[in-house]
Every structure is written in C-alpha cells, then in structure tokens.
Length: 194
Image 1 (cartoon, rainbow, N blue to C red):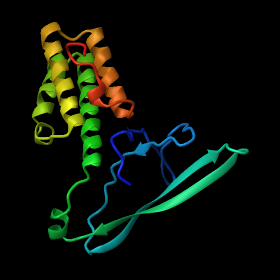
Image 2 (image 1 turned 90 degrees about the vertical axis):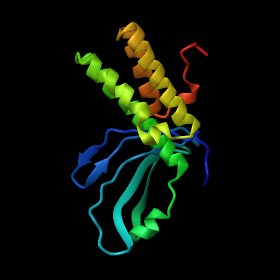
Image 3 (image 1 turned 180 degrees about the horizontal axis):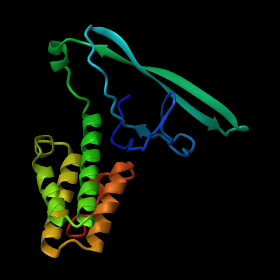
Image 4 (image 1 turned 180 degrees about the vertical axis):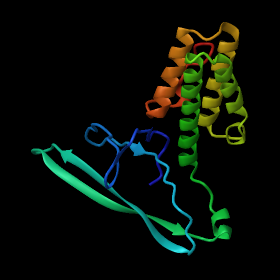
C-alpha cells in the first residue's frame, strides 16, 4: 500500500527481555496507525534464498464490545540476493525520507546534549556538518530539505545569539516532534516566523 508521508515513524526505546525485544507503543484509537522504524543487524549470510530473521508479535487489547486480548505474529524474512541483484534495487523513498528526518532529529538531540555539557562549539560543529552530508545535501525530498533548512536556521541563530534557553527549547521541540512523527519538518516555523 502506497501511503503519503502522513504515516509516522516512532523511535522507541526498546526493552531487552529473555526471549527478545519488547517495544511499547502506547494507546492507539480506532483506525490510528503508527509505523515502527528499527534497525536489525544480521550476521553475514552465505547462501541466497529466504532466511528467517525474527518473528514479530503484536499483542494488544481490543476494547470494542468488551476487552479482548489479541495477538498477531508475523515472521520477518529476508530474501538474500547477490551483490549484482542488490545494486539493481532502488530504495523506498518514503522509508529513506523517514530515516533521514529521524537522523536530523538525532543530530539536534546530540547537539543539545553537547551544548548542555558545556561543549557549545562541538554542538555547533555537529549542526554545521549535518547539511553537507551527501545524503542530506543531495536530497530532493521536500521534508529532508525542510529539515536541512531548519537545522541551518538553528545554526544561524546560535551563531548570532549564542546558546540560550529559548534556542534549546526550540531545538528540543523540533527533535521531539520529528522523532515521534508528530509533525513534518516542512510544518515547522521558519526564521521569519512563517
């Protein structure tokens, strides 16, 4: 199903448990959707073909017509192909967009942490480095471009006015919204307030 960017990515802190990894999504209402983005590092696989990486179980309580516990399990399989076949596959633009926006949010979060720890110059350098990363600089996606512009705006303000409570709050707010899929970078206010 091809969906617009209205679907959201949710970055979660996951809990390692005895038999796997548990992530709590919280409450969803009715037809609400929430995308879960994660990275799974798999060992090198020598042979081509289908490989079982994990089983994903979604457990929830349905509350319509009484409370009923439900559980759905889906195997996560990987189709291993040759290098030549892999090179021919194009990346899903929506997934790439969400990952790059999450990366922008993470850069803001790390820059805030560095500045809070007294390394304002390190935080500024992190913000300077982000827009020139090839994936970011060369992206034509409107949301990635908006995130890049917003980070450049933050950088400009920090260089002009210095790191202060208001700047920290604005950076934290953007990072929070982007990480939790609560808003798109293009919906953020610009430097001129528009």
